[in-house]
Image 1 (cartoon, rainbow, N blue to C red):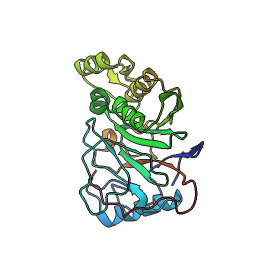
Image 2: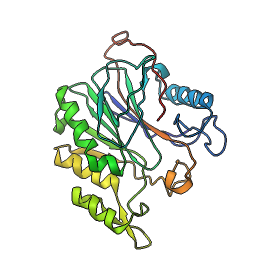
Image 3: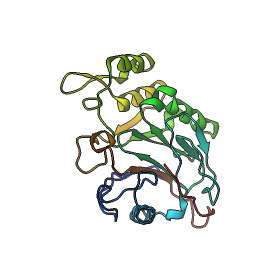
Amino acid sequence: MKYDAIDASGAHFAFTDKWGGVSAVPYEQLNLGGAVGDDPAAVRANRAIAAGNLGLDPDRVVWMNQVHGKEVAQVDQPWGEGRVPEVDALVTNRRGLALAVLTADCTPVLLADPVAGVVAAAHAGRPGMVAGIVPQTVKSMMALGAEPERIVARTGPAVCGHCYEVPEEMRADVAAVEPAAWAQTSWGTPAVDVTAAVHAQLQALGVRDLQASGVCTRESPDHYSYRRDRTTGRLAGYIWLAPLSVGTDSGSPAGETAA
């Protein structure tokens, strides 16, 4: 299992690859998605493994049912036994509570304002990016005291603009919303670059500290890709703020997600 983990002023960012878990083919190995046909017991074990490798309590990781929309949920504690909401972003100002986003080509967006103590995780596929999930997430962070110029943004492994082929009309429609999305495949056909579009949206909002993983999921054998394999697992991005002191945060066990 390999992580790209960064600690910026107390904010922690991590992205998984596909190795180090217990899932069988075609989900080998570290599938973290609960709605892709994998054995639920294997998914639970994988989530515990991933959390343990990050020094997290798996019951303090909050998941979501992602639907390619622009709804954002503010989180104060894990979901417990209640229904996990259908949203595409989570925001919290609770230190020690980790937020998770699942992807297999879409762009995972992790955001933190360590000064305000606010973090967010967003799922930005093409439909969600066009709908405005990224601006909506930043707006929700600002409602909790975050300021765009202080936000640290990291985007994880995603299909790149040279590999995300789409019809010409779709490229035109997406580029009409965010011109930075316009792309062409390496074989010369119309394409969309969602990560570039996300970064452009963040920059337009005043976010300046931006980094992309540089990993294309379709090209990388170490990452899940729906466009490449169809039946496959899901990667996860995690964002959290370290507690200021032991015992400052508490909550109930997190519920399972069908995302």
